[in-house]
Length: 205
Ligand code: GRF
Image (cartoon, rainbow, N blue to C red; front, side, top):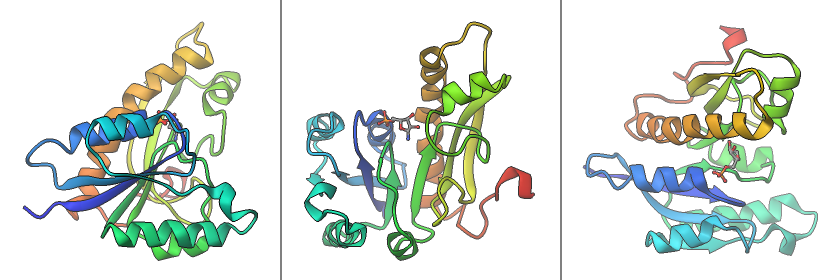
């Protein structure tokens, strides 16, 4: 089989990236993790990627000052240089402009630690607990210009248990993330889910 060439973009720990790297080692997995790119030179995930034998690159957003699009053009050039076909954002903490998002429309995935469209943005675990939610979870979706709003590919839930702290809930959600991101990438790499066919925000169904 021809495996889709995938780049994973990280900014920190990279545990979701490592889950994708491990899943892609299966002979029948329809994608190979060909590149890991970080905007942060000190991202801990870079070590894990290198130890796994994955090519890594750093495109430091601070070198581009306020011009977000210059940063993204450098990022885009790096992806093309490595013949990348699909991009997975995994703990990537830069908001991408419409320029980049439209360049990669339908080929750009993100994982968000909530049951989108609930709790878009940051601090999702604390907000879910404070809201008295009974369930929380994670969502893999196609990226569109509006933050955390693209068509959903895979989503799964966990219970919020009395006494949960942000940390205990985040750990429970992270297990879901590490399971659903490889599932979602498989579906997209096999062409079984596309931007047009993916489920839209649950509330808009
Ligand atoms: C995870 O909670 C993920 O949902 C969010 O960033 C956090 C860190 O993920 N996008 P990772 O360990 O860097 O993959």
